[in-house]
Image (cartoon, rainbow, N blue to C red; front, side):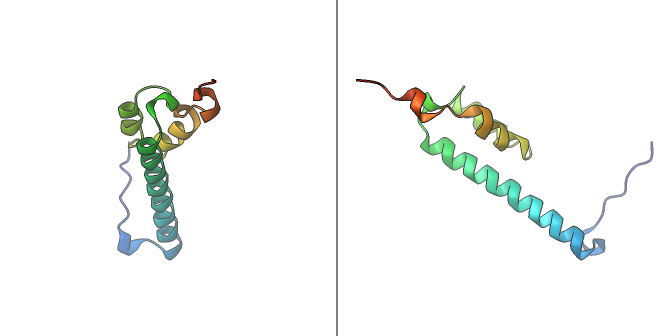
Length: 82
């Protein structure tokens, strides 16, 4: 199996650099939003343990997306009725 050569930043085209920076910015933004939400959201509004979801956010872009899709409970389900 041929080993794919790594591309160095200096040899990348401007378009390629744009997409690399854009993808990294989106990934970092998703992680920051997930971390902020985890810090502010009560444990009762999270499916599973907060620590596990925090760790999952480090899995590329898929961790934060999974947290937003599956890790949060809707606030209406956790409200107590008096």
